[in-house]
Each structure stands twice: as structure tokens, then as C-alpha cells.
Image (cartoon, rainbow, N blue to C red; front, side):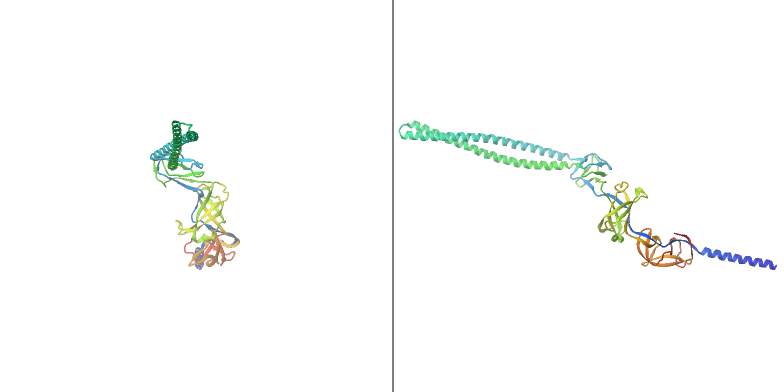
Length: 409
């Protein structure tokens, strides 16, 4: 009987010990930790949303005159040369006005040419008449002088003297008529001057109409690809209506928004890592080419600073409109104490991490330096080799919690 009691007591003690051990083991929460260590670290500013591949030569071609679309020669995605015809508009009334103006120019030019020919002919005739009249007048004056001397000497009859007077009068009248021809020339000159003014005016009117009709021809302003086509045959377009988008894919850049809080770190010339969504797992190099001088409202954040990145010899083509993740390298240290960025917490303006010491969670306030999505530099509050808790998703984990290390990185 005594032996049976001893067995029962021993069994009870063993069960109690097992229960106590089991309770102790279950009270330890398994956690993952990262051993703080000295390694190189980069400071990276990441765009708040994916950047977009754009062209520095990107134009929206709009209608300059109103007209109906009669022909569309290209589609979206087509390559075009500078000056290549993209579409034609038409306005019958304007076309009739242009034809009428051109006909008026032709008529005015013909009238001017006719007046010039008449003037040339009149000038030849006037010169001939004046020369002949002047010669006849000189001869008549000489003959009249001799006749008068003979008449005074009694060697010429009165009738002959009267004939000499008549010839002189006729010669003077011929000279006067010849002089009138020069007046006619001056009149023709005034007519020609008027016709020249008319030709100038109708030419200007015709040129203006021709310039307007020329705007019915929609041409590419530079070589590139058609990114948008916003017209169809039969539509009527008003001045200012967009018709096409044309961009040059040879001169590209990437535009991306940077959070206002980090914009002061970004400067022109800094290196950039580009990760196009079209080429998953591939990284291209680039350089910050411009930081916009103003902060703008962004859909992703309250305020953002837009930057431009110039790709550096991309190994694969970057097409217009592609989305690209952007990381700007704003700093680097070769030997920095660091921890995972996800392990750093902040409350009431203080940053801290959880450490595992003697099987319990301990809070350690820290000061941080440069950081990126993956790692954060710790300036104070940690030592190399400290075990920093990374499994912060565990419920009710806090200072004093009993833990056991599940994995260490």
C-alpha cells in the first residue's frame, strides 16, 4: 500500500513538472530578429508613384482654320517624317474665294501689262513726233526768216510771205500737238501706277487666302510617331480643335513625382535606378536632369516635386508612355550600423526598435541617419550584434514580452 502511494506521488510530481515546463514554453513568443551590423548603405529617395516615359518633342497639332475633314492619311502609332501630310481639311466657300482672288490677280496683271505696252508704244510715237515736229519747226523758222528778209528787200511777193507765215504757224501747231503726246504719257503713267497698286492689293489678298487654304493641309512638324488621332473623315473642326499628337521617340526622358518632404535631397546630376514595369527584374541607369522649381499638388500625396530623369544608354527600348519605378541615390556610406527599415517604429516623434535581451523584449530609442526602403542607418541607441525584432506583426508584442528567437538574419 505504501509503495502504491509513493508511485502516485511521483506521478503527480512528474505531471506537475511537465505542466510547468509546457506552460513556460508556451509563454515564449517566437520572433524573427536581425543582428545589427556595419555594412555599406545607400540613401534612396523613391518616387511616390511610377514615372512615365515622355518625349522632349511632344506636340499637339490643332486646326488653324475651320473646315471639314476630307482625308486622314495616318493612324496612331505610325511613324512620320517632318512635313509629311497627315490629313486634309476643306472649306468650299474659302476655296471659291481663293480661286476668285487668283483670277482677279491674273486680270489685274493683264491690265497692267496692257497699260505698260500702250505706254511703250505711246512713248515711241511721242518721241518720233516730237523729233519730227522740232525738225519741221526749225526748218520753218529758218525759211520764215529768209522769206522775211527777202520780203523786206522787195525780192519776195506778199503772197509768198503769207505762205511762209502759214508754214511757220503750221509747224508751231505740229510742235504743240507733239508736246501733247508727252502729256498722254504722263496720263498712262498715272494709270500704270494705279494698276500696280491694284495688283499689289489683290496679290496680298490672294496670298492671304492661299495661306489660309494651305492650313487645310495638316503636316507633321518634326519626325516622330503619331501618339493621338482625334479626327475622322466628315467631321467639322473649328480653329484650335486638337487633331493629332506627335512625339519624337528618339529624345526621351522620364518624369516622376517626389514627395515634398524628400525633395530637398534631390539634385541635378544624381544617379537614378530605373525599373520599367515592362521589363520586370531589370534595372536601367539614369541621371536627374531637372528638378522642377515648384511644388505641385499630386494625386498620390498632398504635395510633390516633379523631376526629370535622363536614361543612360538603356539596354532595351523605353517606349513612350511606359511606367518606370524611380529610385534616386541621394547619399552613400561605406560603413554604417544598420537595421531593416521595417523594424524602425516611431511614436510621439521618437524612433525606436525592439531588441531581444535575456528572452524578453526591450525598447531602445534610436537616432537614424540615411535610409532606403530596405535598410536604415542607426547613429545611436544600438550596438553591432544587437538582435533587432523584425516580426512586428505579432499581436500584443511589446516591452517585457517573453520571446524566443525563431530565426536570425
